[in-house]
Amino acid sequence: MRLISRRRVPLALAAGLTLAACLTSPAVPAVASDAPKRPVVATETGLVRGVDHGDYQTFAGIPYAAAPVGPLRWRPPGPARPWPGIRDASQPGSPCPQTPNSEAHSGSTNEDCLHLNVTLPRTDRHRPLPIVVWLHGGGFLTGAGSSYDAHRMAVRGHVVVVTLNYRLGVFGNFGYPGLNGSGDFGLADQQAALHWVQRNATSFGGDPRNVTLAGESAGGMSTCTQLTSPSAAGLFAKAIVQSGACSVDFGKNAVYPGVADFSPWTSQAAVRSAGQQAATALGCPQPARALSCLRAKPAATLLSANQNFQQIAYDTPLVPQRPATALREGRFHRVPVLQGNTRDEMRAYVAPLQQQHPITTDSYRALLLDTFGDRARRLAAVYSPTAYGTPALAWAALNTDRAFACPTLTADRLLARHTATYAYEFADRQAPSLGYPQSPQLPLGAAHATDLPYLFDLGGRPASFTPAQNRLAAHMIDYWTTFARTGAPDRRDLPHWPRTPARAAAPYVQQLDTGPGGIHRVDGAAEHHCRLWPQD
Image (cartoon, helix red, strand yellow):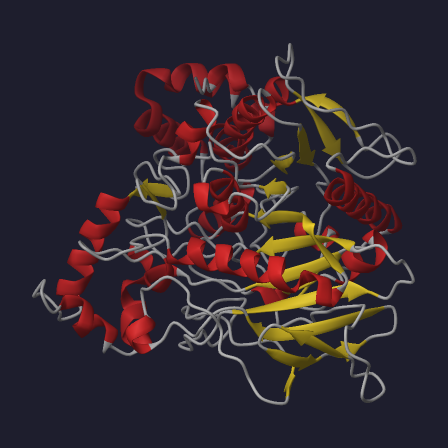
C-alpha cells in the first residue's frame, strides 16, 4: 500500500497489490467460431474475437462508452463508436490515467480507457447465466478491471463475470462551478457499463435480469454508492460490498499521523472548490476559460492534481445524498446485499508507517492523546500493547474497529431493515501478503484486500495457497456465486449462513477462515469493541 501524502489522504485501499494485466472471458458465443481457439461474439457496436481457454472464454478490451478525450473530457460517458469487421478482444485495453503504482508500473496517460472484459464458462446449460459486474479498488486513484482474472469464479460458479475500467482521480472526480456531472464522472462510467451489460449480456450467455454489482475497497464504496443512486435503478439485482460500506470513515490520524478526518465522500461544493484551486495551479485561473484551458492540457499535466480528487461527490443528480445518510433514511434500492470486511483491515495502513517510523510505546501514547484527547485513557486500557502484542498491532486494531468493522456493522443493520442482508468477515490471518511491508512487530494477518486472491487470480497469477486456503477459496466462490444466482449465499454443502435479522439482538457475521470450524458465526460487535464506537 502506498501512502502518497500526509496532508491529502489517498484511499490506497487496493494499492500495494502486485498486479499485472490479466485475461478476460466469455462462453456461449452468438456467432460461430471462425478459427480454433478464437470465438467470435456479436455486440451492439460490432463483432469481437476472444480467446478460448478450454473450460472458459475471455473477451477483453471491449469499449462500452466513447473515449472521454478532447471536448469529451469531464462529460458524461457517451455511446461507443461501432467498428467495422471483427475487433480483436484477446488483450485488455489501457488502464485509465493514473500515476505509476504497483498495478500499473508505468502509470497511464491514455484517456481512451473505458473498456470492459468478459469471462464466461464453457457450459452446456441452456438457461442464461447470472452476471457479476466487478468494480476494482485503488482509492479512486489507481487500478484496472483487467487486473482481476475471474476464470475461477466463472468456471466454478457458472457465472459470467464482467470487469471494467472507470475514470479515476482528476479525470473521474473533478468538479468545477457550472460543470455538469462534477465529481461523479467515474460513477457515471460505472452506470454506462451496467447499461452495456443490459444490452449485450445475452450475446455472452448472461441474464440481464440477474446482474450482481460487486466491488472491493473503492469498488465496494462505488457499489454502495450505486445502491443510493436513483439513476442506477434496474441496472443490478443484487450487490456485494467488500471493505467499502457506506458508513466507512477515516478519523483523525487513522491512515497516517497528522492526517485529519477523511471520508471517501464529499459534497459537490467541496469538489468544485477543489477544481477551482486546481485550475489556478495548472495555469487556468480565468473562470470563463478554465474548462477549455484544462481540456487542452495533456493528461500527464493533469495528473499532478490527482490527489485532490479521490472522493465521490454527493449533492448531485447521480448521488443526491451522502450515502450514509441515504442508508439511515432507507433511501436505497431494495436489492439483496452481501457485505463485509477483513478482520485486520488497517494493518495494511500501519505496515508502511511501521517500516518508516516504528510505533513505540511512547509514540503510541502520544497518538492516542492527540487523536482522542480525554478518551485516550479509556481506549488505551482496551487497545493496550500488552493485550495486542505490540503498539503497532494495538493501533491497527483500534483503527480497524473505528474505520471499518463497526461502521460496516452499522451499515448491515440499516440495510437489513429493508432488504435481505448477509454479513461476513474474512479472517484468514495466514493469507498472502500482497506485497505489503512486513515486520515482526506487525504481522499482516487478514489485512485490507487479502480476501481478493481467494476470488480472483490477481494479475493473472494464482496465489500460493495451502490446501486449507484452497478449500476456503472454493467455499468463498461458492458463497459469492450462489448469492449472485439466488440472492442468498446459503447452500446445503456449506456451513449455514443466516440472513442478518432486521432487529438483531447481537450483530453476528459469518467469519470466513481456514481449518475445521473456520467458517462460523461470530459476534462482530464484541470482537471489535463496537460499544466504544457508536455510529448512531
